[in-house]
Image 1: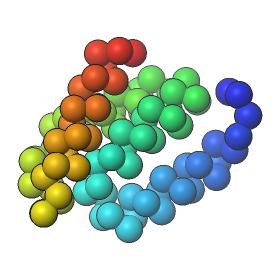
Image 2: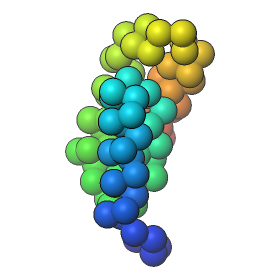
Image 3: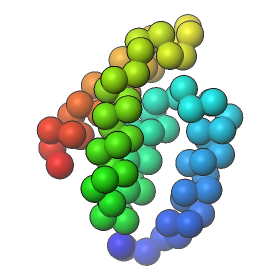
Length: 81
């Protein structure tokens, strides 16, 4: 929308998701906030954030704080947009 390279950004987010086996929820939050908003893709935005909010608290063993932060940010983003 304001420049940048959405295709490259999507590749980077996909690589991050692959490394974390889809369990690193902050990746999904940032993808929704920065990529899906820039592409004006409301469906993907909501899908990512609902996934984050509904994920189990122990989805990433040993990283409960990061998971809690992701869930909090996801809830805030959904209520904002």
